[in-house]
Image 1 (cartoon, one colour):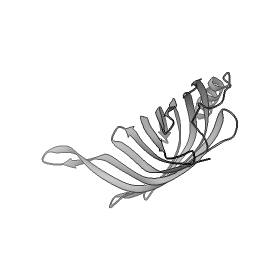
Image 2 (tube, helix red, strand yellow):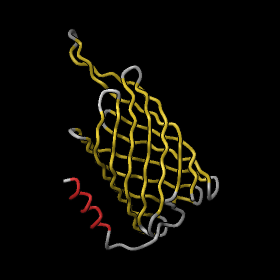
Image 3 (tube, one colour):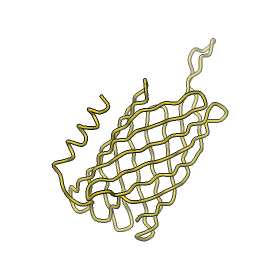
Length: 194
C-alpha cells in the first residue's frame, strides 16, 4: 500500500517539466522553536471523561535541497518535551516535486518516511502532502499544504500553513502552523536560503 501511494504520487508528477516559481527556492536550512498544544483525555469516576489542554516546547532543524529542476529532497529532526508525561523525537526524510502554475506559484507534492521515538515506544510511518507555495512579494513567501500521515496503527489528516519574511536573498524568518485534530504544532525560526 505504501509503495503504491508513493508510486502514484511520482507518476502524477512526471508529465510536468518546469523550474520553480520566481522567488521560491527549494534549497534551504532552518532551525528554531517548536511548540505544541495537545489534548489528552482522563477518566473521572464522578464526571466521566474530561479533556485537558496542555503545551509542549522543543526545537526543530529542517532543510531541503534541490536535486533536479523539479525535484528536491527534504528532512527534519525535532524534539518536543511533553513533561512530565513523555518526550517525542521525530525524524522525517522525503522527496518532493513542484510544478510551476504561474511565475509566482508552484504546485507542490511531497512523500516522506517518518519516525517518532517516545519514552514508551517507537513508531515508523509515512506521510504525503500536496498544496501550493507562492512568492507573494519580493520579501514574502507563503505556503498551504494538506497532508495525510500514517504511523503504524494511527493515521490522520492535517493542514500546514506557513510564511517566510525575507530580509534579503540569503536570510529570512519562517513561521508555520500544523493543524491536526487534538495536536497542533507551531514553528518559528531563521532560514538560510542557498
